[in-house]
Amino acid sequence: MKELISISQLSVGYHKSGENLAVLKDLNLSFHASQLVGIVGLNGVGKSTLLKSIAGLLPLISGEIIIDGIKVQNASYELLAKKVSIVLTQKFGGFNLRVIDVVRAGRMPYTNAFNQLTPAQEAVVESAITMCGLGKYRNTYISELSDGYFQRTVIAKALAQQTEVMLLDEPSAYLDYASKNELMIMLKGLCEEEKKCILLSSHDLDILLKYCHQLLVINEQEVSLIAVGEAKQNKAFMAIAKGFI
Image (tube, rainbow, N blue to C red; front, side):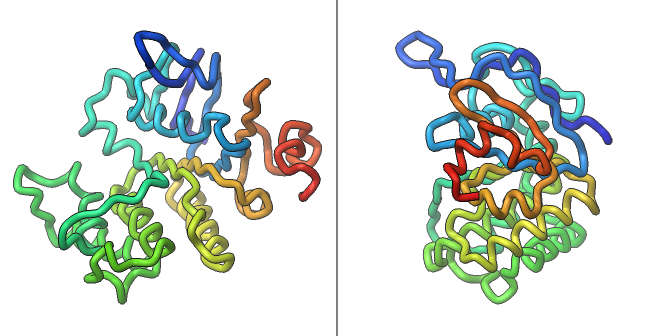
């Protein structure tokens, strides 16, 4: 399988008062096409920080991240937007911003100076809307959406971006149980059919075990990438589950 993300000697975290505050240190990892990878760990362990760093939203403390041959720290935002899409947990608003406007924004890296969409690009937008079950909400203002349908909208935007790498920070947090499973089925299908590499953080351990190919297990002592079938024999994973798996 094609390697899409290569991480070498990576330390990530935050810069505060002139100091580097590392959350995760000395990571060496690789992620491949056709893989759905669940990122697990307790709150505050660094899951979101890692995803933001891979997407180029946070400066690296040390080391490097290469996505499909491109060094993240050297790439322009425009180029990165064609390589990697990210869905974060924070909600955003906008005056008279509809669902279809948000999803269309996923095509911005590919438009001209006037952000005009061609018929082919509109077809990509409609496909993303359909895949996320948003057909009857396409003209709904995002301020009127439930948390669950807002989450579907930002996932649809990431799908419309058509990147080989997708990063999702707790994408199922506001979804009901059936919708959580439907989302994971869709993401697994994207990995296997379109050869995407998708990394997602979640506390829904049972659902990750059901659909993911691999798990990135993060605790205070180590970070390990394991096959899903190894999870129940992995001490760090079982410590996170605290006996409930």
